[in-house]
Length: 293
Ligand code: NAP
Image 1 (spheres, rainbow, N blue to C red):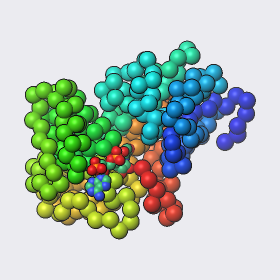
Image 2 (image 1 turned 120 degrees about the vertical axis):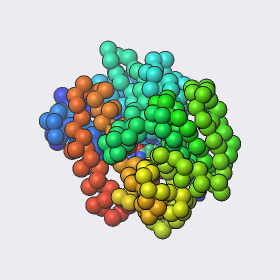
Image 3 (image 1 turned 180 degrees about the vertical axis):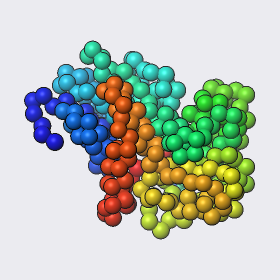
Image 4 (image 1 turned 135 degrees about the vertical axis):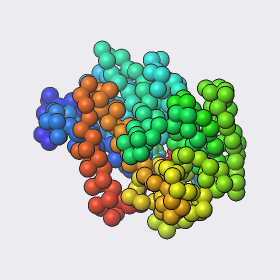
């Protein structure tokens, strides 16, 4: 990559940001397509974000990703929000057009595309179990509700968190069947679902045990662990032992990035190239196996 005065900058902003894999996949895409562009990562304090974003417009940035803790800051600070950002109450992609900023959220789309790609599965009219109601679990739950899931089962060790997500879902889809359970009751609920999603951070560290036993899964079931720092996570191992078909979170990470790429550039993202770049960064360098999501 040769950087010149013509090179178009793109960036991800977060705090902290050192863990991000977004530069790996976007720079691989730019390079593959021969685009004169570069994607960088910046550590920005949340209280400075709404000053930094307009400055990036003045500096000619082509597009911006936001990660924790900026997704909600931008949702509250940007006046122009796409339905994808309105739905999730968070912005992970900023598109710059004619000097103005528009907030999008590609996480839901990334999740749905990863299921479609791996399983030809859509949550519409299906029964979905979600373990963990933090930022990622909430996004998955709201996306499934918006897609017309028939039944959503939420589990979290902190019931107030799961109840809060349930309240949000009730406003989007009042007629959807909804259950909120503790971790103790989670295994039997998990077993009933068509799709089980693991959205806690348990399993990111080497040697951690699955929060669900093998018996929480069954033949014919699909299981998606949002963790992507191992090709097969401990939760996926339990799910596979119980008979389920499994994927990790790499597809969601990839497809949220691919959708952002297309929103910024108008060009179809080279998904296979981006996937290869992510896989080699994650799975071919042992030192990165403990990275955070
Ligand atoms: P978060 O907001 O911090 O939520 C973490 C969740 O994990 C909470 O539900 C938390 O429960 C639960 N948890 C943590 N330790 C636990 C334990 N020992 N026992 C039971 N539950 C525990 O984090 P997040 O942003 O939602 O991320 C969650 C996971 O999703 C991470 O592994 C992250 O890498 C992954 N992720 C993947 C993608 C992707 O593109 N594939 C995108 C975003 C996130 P409490 O509510 O009780 O604290």
